[in-house]
Length: 300
Image 1 (cartoon, rainbow, N blue to C red):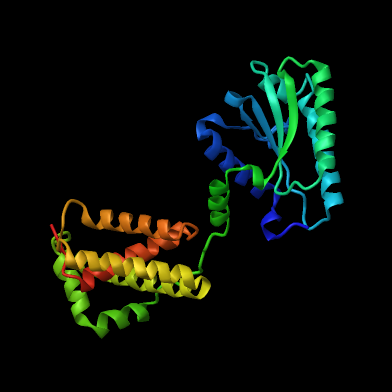
Image 2 (cartoon, rainbow, N blue to C red):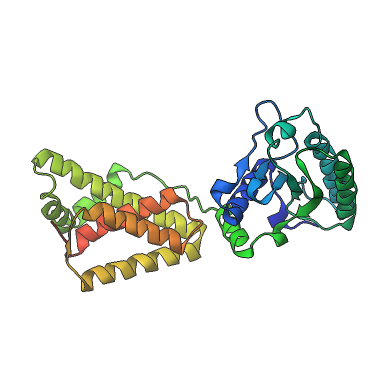
């Protein structure tokens, strides 16, 4: 019986396999064959440099082994018929190459009956002596165990994307920060006046930075509720980064804010790869705003 990691929507599985193949063969060596316009032709992806074609299929789980095998055999029969049609799309696409392997990529392969069926169908294809099929043509089945383990695990981690629902800050929340400790706004004003000379615009920037900070705090609260371990990793990373800034150089040069935000976002996503990038961006923006309020950094 399939476990949770084997349960896939068909489109999701196809996208997953595409990323696996790009990691294995290189993005420039994998050609997608869309089925939306004019229908499919018995293949989803082509790797011509290896003389391989892939067809993706995810059985609607949960089912038992026998049912899964029957469905996979039926998929092979249906799509190999399309692939072998001299008047079909595969013949037109592959007319300048010789395909050695037609590969059915599935989340779970657990029946030798499917292998036997694939061997029978491969023999039928070879007997046709198709101009785009090699003499040693085979049909094989691949599942998660046949892909690179590190790549598979990384893609599975991304599949479990952490997307907390983050509340936009209210005016009252921003006012609490602004009015609670006036020195925070004063620090921002002192540092940002070098970038914004117009007094009215400066106050708008200060309010935006305070709002960004509150939004970031809301994002961290939502992350803590949804994924406590990821929250701890992010908070620890931000604290370590702030410690380095305090002990190291107190002057940021060049385009410091953009560089600092981008760098922190990159570190956050490296620490928690399945964190939603938008949430990472919100947290990084707020962290830098917080540093500007509390840390003795100077902007050139």
